[in-house]
Length: 156
Image 1 (cartoon, helix red, strand yellow):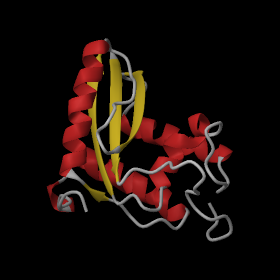
Image 2 (tube, rainbow, N blue to C red):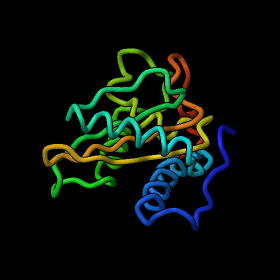
Image 3 (cartoon, rainbow, N blue to C red):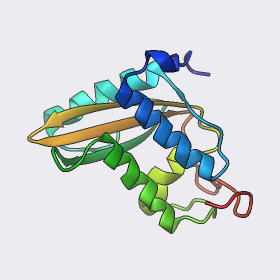
């Protein structure tokens, strides 16, 4: 494990909601629940701050984490809307091995449910009336040629 996970009681309401929603999505495909990682959260906060300065989103490089990004207009979207948008990608994923062509359509969802991932840390920032959400995952997932789950093992 990368870090000791934070005790669930020490999380904010927002963090508990983010973790619970991820774990609900993971349970649907039989993936083990995630724990909260202070290290993943710190990296997410650092990157969310950099993205806010640019008011744009792009993936970080070399952090050692898997990463999902969301940007939406404040007042219309909140953190859970970003996570739900990632979950919506499941409509295009049926447990097949991940390919480079499909990754842009399903990669947020498959990172959420990746079977070897054990830790989550998320953070937000704001720029020009936009919310930026960064969630980091450890160990990272989305390895080409591998499956996020086995079809038939559970019913998604």
